Image 1 (spheres, rainbow, N blue to C red):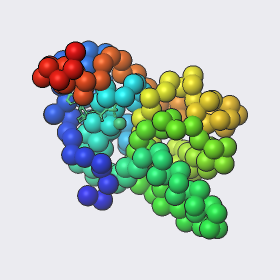
Image 2 (spheres, rainbow, N blue to C red):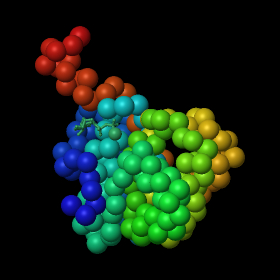
Image 3 (cartoon, rainbow, N blue to C red):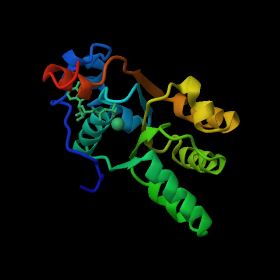
Image 4 (cartoon, rainbow, N blue to C red):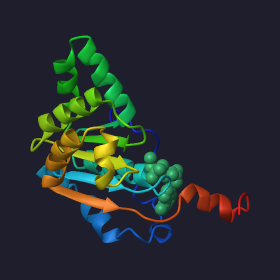
Length: 189
Ligand code: ADP
Ligand code: MG
């Protein structure tokens, strides 16, 4: 699809019973797409396997259903593309590309620490989109750890300042769904 989702997942397919730290009402509220209409940011935080990408894809599909343009990209791909564009003197073009969709989903920020230059490029993108479009970021790191993720506390503060201004932050706790499934089937203890 145009949105480039990594897999097919729906909100209907999400088992809330498996994830008690999540409020189903909050997800249903986000599924209305009002936060996208408002240009709000959404942070989905939590350890690996708890359903962050699943929910990001599900909410992305709902946004499309409500008529918004959506682009899904992994943080690693996004930052590689911006870094390369910068080196090639085509940063403006790339920033324009990623600033265009009404909702940009950036998956897995923080799995790898960023180079200072990458942190600045990400800041430029967030600033460009600020109060124009929505951004959904998934991360395995809490916002208090973003200074070390960005390798630069000043850039991290500037990014968080914009992301958190009109934002929804959902922190998912608990066990990996993948491991839970394996445990159930007796593959691991
Ligand atoms: P994360 O992005 O947090 O690492 P994922 O969203 O990739 O986790 O979830 C891992 C796998 O488990 C995916 O296949 C996802 O669809 C599934 N999954 C996770 N949580 C749930 C849930 N509560 N209900 C149904 N499937 C889930
Ligand atoms: Mg994920």
